[in-house]
Image (cartoon, rainbow, N blue to C red; front, side, top):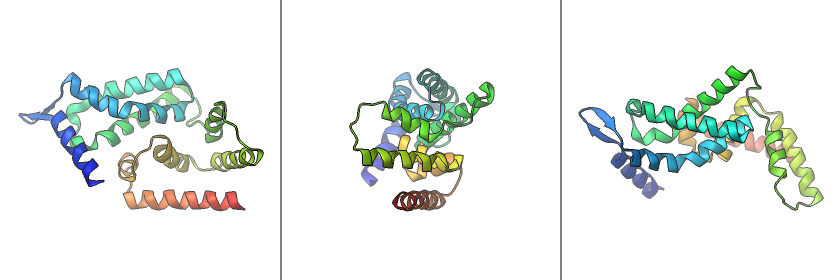
Length: 187
């Protein structure tokens, strides 16, 4: 884990050249940052808007905003949570402007996942339906914890940064949420 963090720190430090107090980045540098984050940003946005074209547009807007505001990024090591915060704000703007529901329901997300050809036993199908029902009853914030951790595959530290909450609180809420879901599934 420390090796991964050191590699990330080193590569981001190389990408974010400091000259006379301002950050400068080349197109190649930003392309690398984009490459590392684009897929998870898209998955996250798709889980929110449930439309491929809209998710692609929002992802493009997210990275364009990131590129334009890169000089404002104080800590290059916080690029990922920063870009996810931008993506989250773009999703909020999308719903505000279009007067759509603020978040797609997890049951709809799981329903689209069912469209993929997967052979499940009747028992597994029943359990999946039950889980869909349980997740759809979660608060929007609890669904957001699941999206950021499972769909976007972000570490707790980055989720904490995005949601402006302490990492320990995020972990506690996430694991309690999983325990609660597991207990409800087992009953």
